Amino acid sequence: MTVSPVQPRTTQWLLTLLAGSFLIDVLLTVDNGKTTLGALPGAALLGLCALLGVKQPVQGAVGGSFVLLVSTAFIRLSHTQPESISINDILLTEVAAGITLVVLVVWRTPPITAALCTASLVGVAVLATFFRTGKWSASGNMRSLQLGLLILVGAVLVGVYLRSVSGRRTETQLGALIRRQWPLAAALTLMLFLDLRIGGTTNQVFALGGAVIASVCAFFAPRAPVVLSLIATAAIALSPFVMFAGGILPGRMTGGGPVLTEIAASMALIAFTVRWAPRWPAVFSTAALALATFLALQLRELLDRTRVSSNADEFSLYLAVLLVVAVATGMYFRSRDRERTQSVRSAVSGAQQSERLALARELHDVVAHHVTGIVVQAQAAALVSAKDPQVAVKALAKIETSGVEALKAMRFLVASMRGAKPAGTSEATEQATTDLTADLRAMIENFSGPAVRLNLDVPQVVPQEVGRSVLRLVQESLTNVGKHALGATAVFVDVVTSAAEIHVKVADNGTGRRQDPVGGSGGYGLVGMRERVELLGGRFAAGPADPVGWQVDAWLPVGEEEDAT
Image 1 (cartoon, rainbow, N blue to C red):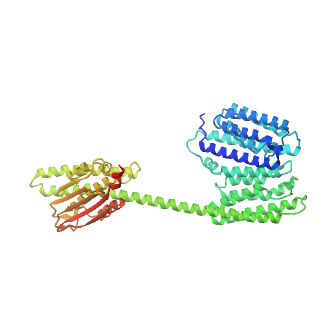
Image 2 (image 1 turned 135 degrees about the vertical axis):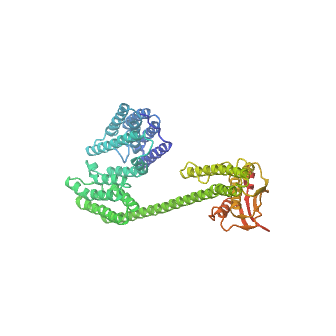
């Protein structure tokens, strides 16, 4: 099985996690004096082994086991007193590095190798737990073993999951959820460490069952926020009765009180529910979860007979503040989601409108041009076929050519609608900027209307969009001459370049206007030409010429592009 490499972003997050854990260890060490300094070098080296394990997991695990063993011996001989908020006598950095190494070897090595490396790390960790300081405490060691077992199972499961998804090319829903929710999982795990640290009973892990269930519900909350909030509500509400029935209380140094993990998970659930759930289900589940958390706090205060004074009222005030913060957070993200959805819809609508305009413009400019030529040639052939059959034969040849070009244009339009081509492209437009002079001459040669007098003065290199627009302007103007210019005997096409712009001028000498133009009129020719010119920052004008006929003028800027070249 081929395992995909660890992404650089994952390595950066791992480095951040280890650095944050080491900072916490440093702060605890400074707070507790010089007797705890001896544990820091080993923790730092174990963190480096975890970073090494990203590329070489076996070497990292073996090196980590050796470092942890040497660090344990040094701590025992130097009478160092490690201070940790996690497993007994093992620093938080060492726990984080050990979890990382177990995940890496399970994920990226064969099963037998992963089992040996994991057994090595676990064995040295157990040795460190019992022999670093030589202080034996039945309750403390039992709690450390329970927590260590929980951490080991979690690390192995994560490694197995990463191993199973490494070969997948597409991300699953669970994978996307883990990618989004792992910061919350890390925060809740840290809260669980704090709850275990300040707890005093042997069965403290089991006393936090409600908090663990609520944390799992918070992790999966984006899937079904209302249902999972109600499950967490039931778990939190029942947890004090379960502890009382088993003779277990949180056993804090100050007696009964709030469970930090439980509160953090509840706040996360409330924020998720307010953000994603419908209004009234969100109100109901939020109220139920807040009430359950409050009642659980009060029940622990009542059931803990060791308390001398009660801080329940103060904790209740804190809970109220946290509730407001959680609801406000959910409402803020709900508003952001709504704005983002509206922005996406607006962008999609604008893109669709732009595509429709491009397709409509291309359909009008290209297909209508060729079809108009076919109609004009057919009418001319019908008029002269009896008198001069050779003229009719030539007209039929031009009809065939125009028909082929129309079919090509239609195929390009269909391809663009299916996504194979950009909207608003055709064979003519794709070649429009290679040689504008040749394209214009070819178009005029195929024009079936009055004689065209062409005056060209354009540079060899023309910006792509400008060249395409010049070709389309001339093409549409000639189409309009064939449709509307009654009695026209000549068309004058001038395309000349000044210092900063190209001037396109198309005029005819028609003496009248058709009441019913060939093929009918869609009325979008001038609109499309004006749109093309204005999109490029140019100017457009069209109207009656002096003394007769119709004239189209367009000025397209080219100065900046020429300067750039």
